[in-house]
Amino acid sequence: MPLQRRVPKVGFKNINRVEYVGINLDVIQQLAEKLNVTKFDFDTFKAHGLVSKSDLVKILGRGELKAKLEIKAHAFSASAQEAIEAVGGSIEKL
Image (cartoon, rainbow, N blue to C red; front, side, top):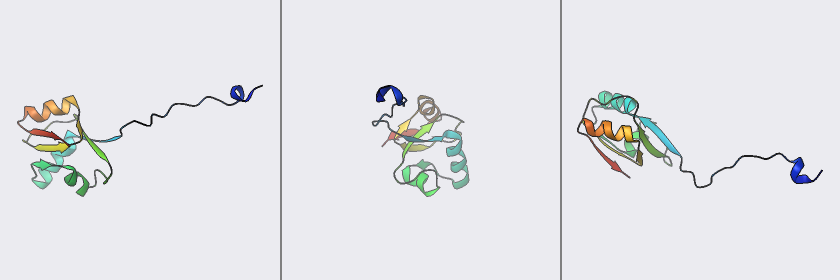
């Protein structure tokens, strides 16, 4: 039997995939209450151990916000963006 028929096929790995670290709104709300912070950026997430220095941050929509917050991240889900703007907060993409 020829070699190409003996060796099993394997999957595909996309070399252009962008890998994000997801942070949900409930985690951000807990940090805001604990630290009395209204501005979140990459350095804040890094200081509290949620991301490492080479990660990209994506804000996800699980949970709810109660306070007006300014959040800076690399990406936002549609539900997170709506929830942040609904309470009067602002977003900025890095």
